[in-house]
Structures are given as C-alpha cells and as structure tokens.
Image (cartoon, one colour):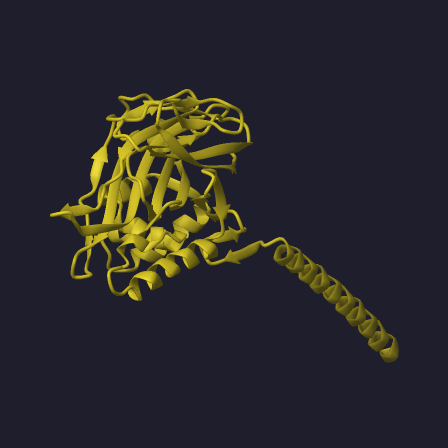
Length: 358
C-alpha cells in the first residue's frame, strides 16, 4: 500500500513537472514572440506599459489609481504634489510636467478614474513627408545635437545644431475617463489631453496648427466650464549657457476650432531672441498642450475608439499667415493646411486605438 502511494505521488509529481515545463515553454514562446516583433511589456504595481517600435502605450486602471492615491495619502505632500507624483508614476517626462500650468495638472487629476496614454515620436524627411521613429532613434538624434554643440569651435559656435530642417516631434495623448458622478451621473465622458513637443526645434517657425480627433465622440459645448484649453511653453539657452524657461502662454476659446469629429488650435512658434543681429536666447524645446472634453456617442456599449493626432508645421519663404481647415478624409482626419500660394507644411500624423468599456 505504501509503495502504491509513493508511486501515485511520483506519477502526480511527474505530471506536475511536465505541466510546469509546458507552461514555461509557452511563456518562453510568448516572450520570444514579443521580442521578435519588437514588443516590450513592462508591468509595475500601478502601470502596464507596452512599448512597440512605433508607439508606447501605458495604462493605469481604476483600482491601480485608487491604490496609488492611498499610498500617496501616507506621505506629507500637498494635493498638487500628489498629482505630480501620479504623472511621474504614469511615465511623464520631467520637461512635459514642467511645461504644464499647476491648475491644468490638478484639473487632470480631479475627477480621473483611469488613464490610457499613447506616445509617438516623429520626424520630417527631406522630401517633406514625415515618418514615425523609435524613442531610441529620437534620443540618439538629440544626443548627436548636444555633442555637436559641445565640440563646436572657431567661427561655428554650434548653435545652429539646436535646430533641424526636419524637426523631431513627440506627440502624446492621454485619454482620461471622468468620474460619472462629476458629470451629473452621465457615463462615457473623457478629457483628452494632448502634448506636441519639439525635442529638436525646426528651423522655420511660423504659425502651426495641432489637432485631436475622435470621431466616436460628441464634443462638449464651447461655453462648458473647463472643457477646452491650450498652452505653450519653451526652454532656451542664454549667452552664458544657462537654461531659461518661458512663462506659460494660455488660450481657451481664442484660436480654437471645434469640428464635428475633433478640435484644433493654432499657435505661432517662437523665434530665437536676437540683439544686434546675434541670437541671445536660443530655443531648445517647445511644448504645446491641448485639453478637450468629449463624450463617447454610443456610451452604453463597449467599443474600440480611434484617436487621431495631427500637427501641421508650416514653412514659407514669405511672411504670410497660413489658413487652416478640417480634413474629413478617412484615415487622415484632423486639421490641414488650406492650399495657398508659397505656403507649405510638414504633416505629423498618427492614429491610435483604445478600448472603451461602459
């Protein structure tokens, strides 16, 4: 009887070992699949991040956000400091946080239930088209710029290397689900927060336009409190090599257009500051931020929601003010440059998808 029990236990252990090996094999195959397809998945206590070659996606669930807030309550922090820590936990870059007005950060967190964030890096090509690049390629280009400046000598002070004829742009959208209790019990409301950040400044700086389009949504009315806002911020280097920052310029309804499927703002990019023909303050980074509120039209059913980011960077040999309109072409929804003499543009465009569950 004892031998039978031992044999039975041995057989059970063998089955368990085989199952475990098969499970590990499946796990290894899955990891190999992710690696072969350039996908990297990182999970922390609060955030899940999926990094692909073309986009970085991060999510924080309702339960994770509540847990993080409970943890932050144990620390001696102001409400604003807690909100900043949530942004850091979500993976926001320090320069992005620095460019936001405190009231925008606090509003972003006030009635937030969950976060879905997507980040994409882009550059313009010599033929005027644009392409998506990896975060690593963008950082390498920025490092090359820094090295060129650090090693400049003679008549070349290296400052021209702060700009680029193509420009490197980071676009980020954060889809923040709003607590229905703060919207009269209505579900399906989102704040769409978008950032358009010049990590390497473009050479030509005129009036640009930037949009967020979500065709599955109905956009809030213009007179709704806190529904729309935009801001601009930049950093520069002074003649002594010190970094200086601008005041945060703000707009609400000024230069705002609300279309059927999205919104866009226009902003004039700042030039370097000159004195007697010499650049005194040279811009190194510019951030444009947009906040817009909308409701999923079919808010009672689960659906995949398409989100379209677009930044139209204009350039011209003439000093003219460009004109913009709303493009409804499938796959290219968003702001566009109206056809006009001597005005051209680089269109930084990317579409993303996230899941909505009521």
